[in-house]
Length: 357
Image 1 (cartoon, one colour):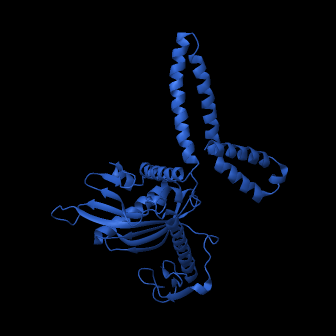
Image 2 (image 1 turned 180 degrees about the vertical axis):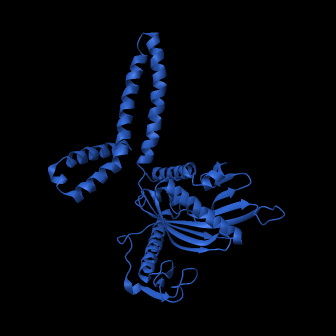
Image 3 (image 1 turned 45 degrees about the horizontal axis):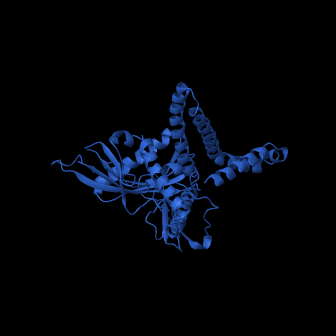
C-alpha cells in the first residue's frame, strides 16, 4: 500500500511541475486533462503526507517519553494517544482512497421508477419516491428533466423516467437501484390493516455517444399519434416515437413533446443509457462470478429498503442501517441514509480489493 502511495506522491509532484510550464499552459485541452488528473489524486496525496507527518510526530513523542522529567512524560503520553488514534484513522482513510474509482461517478443519471405490487398504493408510493429524489436533487442544485411519465388518476405514477444532471449525481444515487417496499395503512383502508406495496427504482449512468455505439441499421423507428392530455395536436400529428433496438429487443417510447424530433432525441437518450447499463451489467456479472458479494450491481432482484410509516422508520437492508426520520427522508433529506449505504459498499469493495491483493 505504501509503495502505491509513494508512487502517487511522485506522480503528483510531476504533474504539479508540468502544469507550471509554458508548454502545457499553451495547450488548453492538455492543461485541462492534466489538471483533472492532479485533482483526482490530490486528496490521497494530502492524506498520505499527513500520515507521514503523524508518524514522525509519534516517533518524536516516544523519544520525549523516555526523558527523565515526569511531567514531560505524562504530557507526551497523552499526546501519543491522540497521535496513534489519528495514525490508525489515516490508514483506514488511505485504504479507502486507494480503492479504484468508479468511472461513472461524475456522470448524470437516468432515473426510472415504476410501481410494483400493490395496485393504487404502489403507484402512490412510486410518486412519493420520485418527489423524494426530486427534492434531494434540488437541495444539491441539480437539474431534473422528466422524460416520460404515466400517471394514475389518484396522484400516483405507474412509471416515471427522468434525467438528473449535476456533479456527482451518479456517485450519490447509484446504490438506489432495487425494490423499495412500503408498509402503511392506506387512507382508503377502513379496518386499519397494514398494507405492503413495492416500487422499483433504476439508476443508470447517462451514456454518452462515445460510451455506446448504436448503428442505424439496428434500429426500427415507428411514429404514431400521441395519446392523453396535450391539446389540439394530440391524435392529429405523428409526433410520438417508438424506437426498437433490434439486436437486444429493447423498446423505448416517447410522446411527451409535440415535436417528433424532440421525442426521438429523448428516446435515443434513454435507449443509449439502457444499452450502456446492460453492457455494464454483463461486465459486472463476469467479474462477480463465483464471489459472494455482488458489489456494484445494485442488487436489483432483492428488496433493498423498507419504508414503515407507522413507526416513522426507514431501513436499508443491505447496510443494516435504520433511521426514525422517514418524513424527513421523503422530504429529500437523504444525506445520512445515502452516506451509510455508500460507506457500506465502499467497505465491501475494500474487502474485495484486499482479498484480491
